Length: 191
Image 1 (cartoon, rainbow, N blue to C red):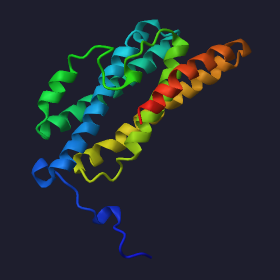
Image 2 (image 1 turned 45 degrees about the vertical axis):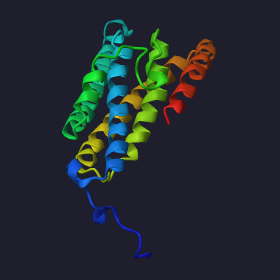
Image 3 (image 1 turned 90 degrees about the horizontal axis):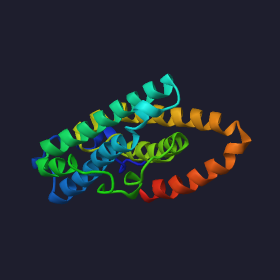
């Protein structure tokens, strides 16, 4: 065993901005602001499907997704406020589609198949980002991220199920390929 490698339990965890270097604080706040902004944007992109998803179950799941995405956005915003970056949160709350930080968050989600493919590719990126912050050295984020990851995995599982149903009809294959070509590069650009 290499004794020079620190285990996650032995790494110092920060609770307040006073404990952090300016560089650490800036990088942390950038991550938090992108995550919060992505949540607010996703709500704008998915809101239509509260009323127009094809089934009552789909509407219920979209409502749940929006609720959980909003909780994540508010948790990230709360952390930004606690870190002294409330001005960033104030600016985010007024953004409209077309004004968000990442391109994938500025593209309209126009049809139900578009919505499920969007959820698959964009949610996959969010879950990947959050996985990187398990055992974060910023203790409040470390405490919050586990629940967020579980929720994002459920969002993606919903999308996988709906895409599987959609692709049972061979005539939908071309549309799926078109939508994947729309969302996959945008999802990857989020990295």
